[in-house]
Image 1: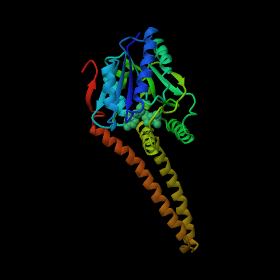
Image 2: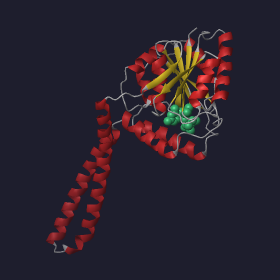
Image 3: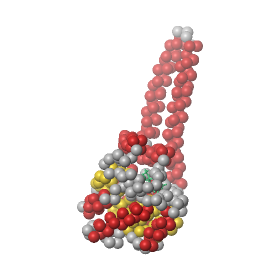
Image 4: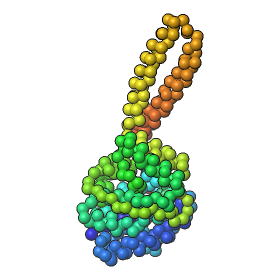
Length: 316
Ligand code: UDP
Ligand code: MG
């Protein structure tokens, strides 16, 4: 029977927090009375620099019921960093953690099954969406395409798993060893290892408020995921370079033949086309390589991944 800490990043979530907290409270009570988790379990809300009343609500929840704790980040650091801040804060005190979204899209009834698998000896349990019928067609198509692309590029992620996940203390301590600034948690956790399993759940609709992941953020999240987990795009450029080399030999032979047969002027079209084509390929290639150099640049700076302004808990 372990001490469970639920970690919930919150960015402008004032509309959902009271509902989320009472539902989780009820769930934890149930699990405590069934003897599946320690009565000293906690729910940790990480306020990711919200501009609304999120932190006030968290403070209020903490005052009413010490099961709720809070971590206030000094500014908006993004979902992944907020989640990491929470997990790294609880890693010493908890026996097991579960990370989930604040908007109740992750079905909290799956917590029990996750805990059962943990009690059976799993260190990592991935929450996997069985159906995505509540997401819009567009979101579903882009998200599923993204998982497929990721895997085909060699980044090992669990299909249709976001960040709803159970991790034991030793899995968290393992995660803490990964010092990367370009953080893509769902790609790193499988690298931590340990016995893992999945739990299926139905993805619900956001309870209230709006998605904090507009298309632009989703795209940059996808590029982040691919470039921080896989070097295949660079290898593809090398392949492209080799193909271009053979094409250029063919063009060379072709133009020599044209030269000796006395038809040089008519080659203008091919010249122009190849100049633009090669120029385009080079620019795209530079862009991809630049993406990686940018990553190296950020990693060498070794900047903090999150900065905590204040805590609402028993230890600080
Ligand atoms: N989130 C965060 N910081 C951000 C953006 C989002 O902490 O900069 C949190 C947000 O409060 C929510 C979770 O990350 O708990 C997932 O965000 P959201 O539900 O908006 O994404 P979606 O489900 O639409 O992909
Ligand atoms: Mg959501």
